[in-house]
Structure formats: C-alpha cells, structure tokens
Image (tube, rainbow, N blue to C red; front, side, top):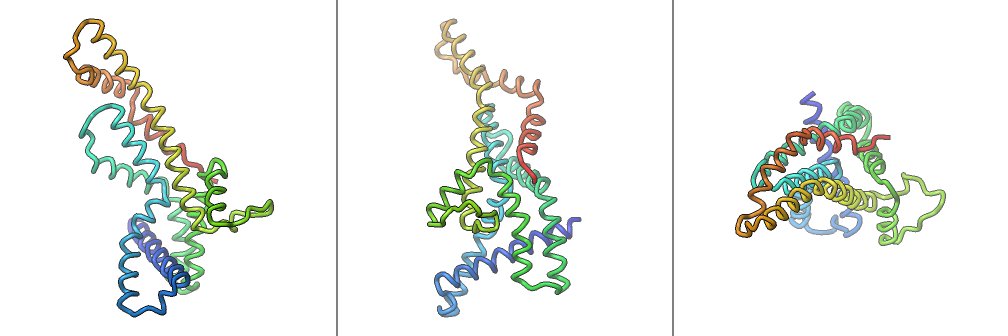
Length: 244
C-alpha cells in the first residue's frame, strides 16, 4: 500500500509537471527559447508542483480549520504548527485515498505497463481530481466568477468536462477557503462566550489588572476536553467533504 501511494504521488507530480510545461510551452512559446531558459522554467515549475498538488486536495480546508481551533482555544504554541501540519497531511491522505486508488488503477498501472501514452495517462489522472473538486462546489458562484474573468461563455448545455482546469482549480480553492472560514467562525463562538463571561466577571469584581485570558484559558481547555473537541472537529472535517 505504501509503495502504491508513493508511486501514485510521484506520478501525479510528474503528470502535473508535464502538463504544466506543455501549457506554458504552448502559451509563451517556451520551446523557441534557449535550452538554459527552458531549464530555468523547468526547475521553477518543479519547485511549485508540491504546493499546486496540495491546493487541489482537502489539505487547505483542514489546516485552516485546525488553525482556527488553536487560536480559538488560545493556546499559543500548543499544539505546535508541525503537529497540525502533520495531522492535516495524514487526514488529507485518508480523505484522498479513494481518489489516489482510482488514479493508480486507471492511470498509473496502465501507464507503467505501457498500455497508454502520457497524454491519456494525464487525462485519466486528472479526472478523479476534477470530480473531487467539482463535488466540493456547493454553488456555481466561484465557477461563474472565474469563467467570467477568463471570458468563457456559460451556456445551458455546458457540462463539467467543458470547464478548464485553470478555472476549476482557483474556484475550488476559493470555495475551500470560504467553507473553512465558516467552520472556523462556528468554532470560535463558544470560546468567545467564555472570554466575555470571564471578562465581565473580573470587571464586576474590580479585578481590572488581572488579564482575562489567563483566567479563561483553563475554562476553554476544560470545555474542549468535556465535549471531546478533537473528535468533534476531526469528525466534522472529514464528513464535510462530498464524494459523488
């Protein structure tokens, strides 16, 4: 299973690399440039590929919500950012495993067996990712925005296949940011109430010099423990993603 995940991840990176290079080569006529310039472009795109791949998965929503819950509780350095990023990566792998498995079956294995070419393999690898991104779009507002910016006419008979990746990917990212901020806002409310109650109590007792954060922090941690906060947050995050 680990070998399949490694091969699939490597193949996705290679596919994105080749598809991005081909796109830029056609758009900016990179093929006409000197080999040294082509090499610079190649390394630049290669450095951006991991970030591009992460932005097309569930990682964005997960890491933002985890950051919100950390700020809401008020613990400055607990848990550390490395722990949150690691948790987000493993949750992303858990959520995206069916998609990676489909990429492995439909694109990776046929490509390694030389049954299909590079272009067909890229197209098959992008299909499950596109379906995942489309399923997360609750409405077409973001898609319509980027379709309008790209000067692509929206028709009644337009299908999902007619939406180019350069429109779908930024629309997906904007949608993920909006959903993550909505979830973060809801998580902030109970802890904000505790801060307000503690601050009002301290003011009524005349304890102006005592920082309310120092008193409210144990109560917020206690609340998070009593409601089994990590189970609630992770469960809500995983169930918030739609498949089909």
